[in-house]
Length: 299
Image 1 (cartoon, rainbow, N blue to C red):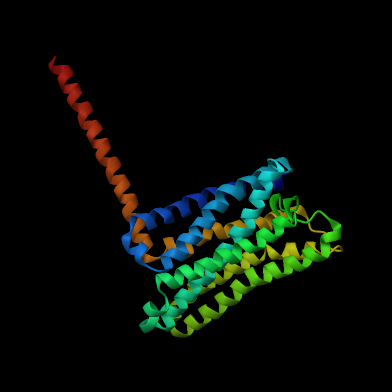
Image 2 (cartoon, rainbow, N blue to C red):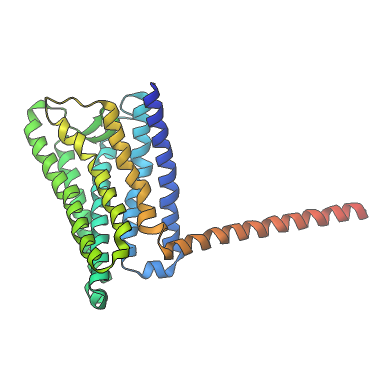
């Protein structure tokens, strides 16, 4: 392995560990707090967390193995499943972000009618569309054998091995990225610019979320450029773009959950409860050991 490959492998390991810890903590907050579960945005955050966790445990390890061994990890069937999941989860997480931005727009711009405009039934319908939209593209790609191991990204992802299908694959890739990534970016920009007019204090958070989307769009650049037969893309750039896409999995829990007051209070309560229980157990063990020592001395 070259020094660059060692660095990239280390980055993937760090991203994987932080993403796993942060998203599990969000899930614990959701299960621990009844107030969070009652909120409609909690459904979107739960869906986003589900996508991030599944991406962390399925795609990141195989990308790490691809960087280390420079070949397809596992058999074709495993790679096809992971490639299918990558397309589905990436699209689903982007649409979940768009759904959260719509929720914030309604809450801030139309506060008096928020509860009538955004109910659990409405959130369930939005999530149903999100899943239907997200699963449709990987189904088409899998049926046409456009999923496999791509050495440029060291990952199982969208990949066309047949030159005769190049035109169809180019059209599919363009439609997929336009209706998923670009559409989400437009929704994010529109909704948060509307929110910005009403609440100036949201400005910093809007910048963070928009930058998140732009970071994910970095993953589109090499995919679109690689479709050109003229331009050659270095594999290091492809893996770096994949790491940038994975960085969204790491940042999502902090931007949408852990840094918010309610979640911050909840995870602090969880940590304090764990530490308190640990302290009680430690005190009990110390007391028991002390009592044993006294009994031994008396004997």
